[in-house]
Length: 164
Image (cartoon, rainbow, N blue to C red; front, top):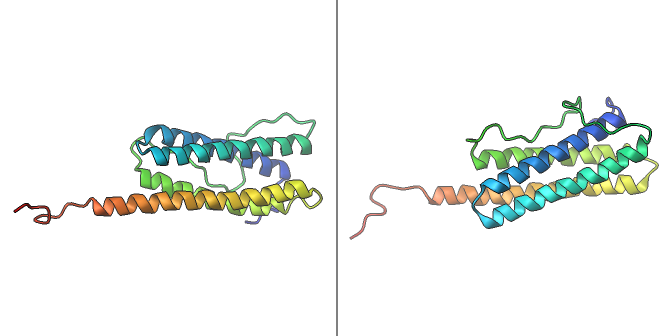
């Protein structure tokens, strides 16, 4: 992801906004699912996004100490928003959208890390975040595949389930 056309401030604000949105979506989905294991995984992902947000806020305050942190409603940085389109959106669609957002976050953090050439701690942490986003992607991918397999097995075929 080429981030050279954006200011560092725009990039950090976009990252914070993205982490807030992801946290909210994972939290909301977790309250709606009945599968306890999936609920735990979604709550874990929500907490991870919260930790990322807190770190990036610290980076923002360190980088721009005289500015007040204000999250914009929109951002010029092309990160796909993670939102729930409506209440009737199938869980599979939500997981697929979340996977795409996690992949984009991975690419974003890899590129953002390159902006911090003089601060190894920030650069390494952002690179670690990129790796974590791939782990989040894999968690979601496994859940989506499991859900897809269950839906395939739940198909009813005439005369297959007929008794003696």
